[in-house]
Image (cartoon, rainbow, N blue to C red; front, side, top):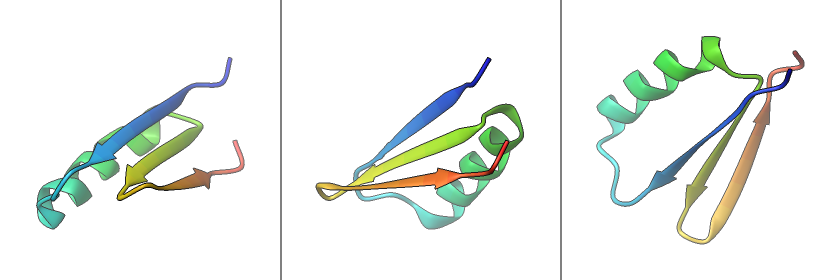
Length: 46
């Protein structure tokens, strides 16, 4: 089963964002980050 997570950014605090991304990465196959009308998909090849 593939698991995809999403984070919507609105004026993020960079240090906390880094902590959140580091916490979620081991748990998902893909992470979708939405910011300022731009979507970036990060594929970890799992």
